[in-house]
Length: 229
Image 1 (cartoon, rainbow, N blue to C red):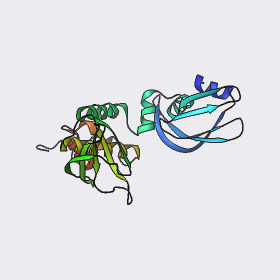
Image 2: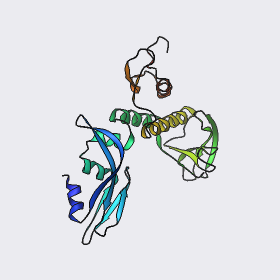
Image 3: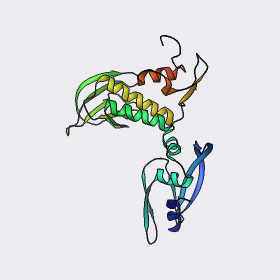
Image 4: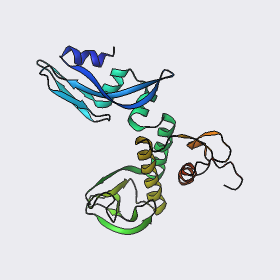
């Protein structure tokens, strides 16, 4: 048993498994990861999110801090590849590619929430259901691109943060990265597919060209094997 779990058990915690979250490859075999609940010595239950948020496990004489991801890794004895797939819904191969794409366009991160005020200088029309995006800087100098209209309900907008003033292609590719990460995480698409033209199983990263083309071809289940595509 992993030392983290042993430590938490020593201060009085036990773990219960709930509904299935995701099936990962574990030593070449499928392993069903289930929702974990930590039960404290007092009997209080703590549902552990399947993410990287921090947790504090208080005890009578000691306390222990760990991230939720560390708890899942330790409890199920997951390697890096399995943990990546559990948290993100994609493999390390895709994780590395998306990391390089974020670095290429200077994308620091993105989130959805209420609109924030900043000094907008440009407005870019962006596809994928986003519409116009205002681009500029906060008062402290940070660069931001924010959708001009709500994308969730009546209030929440999409906000993208960059390490430089982004061009329109930068913002478009950032939106594509967000879409891919969300689709994989929510199980809308898998990394591999059967090409509708050649009938072979392909990985979405087998598709030649920039990230926009990879997405477009992946959505149409085509690997680009036909000439001129």
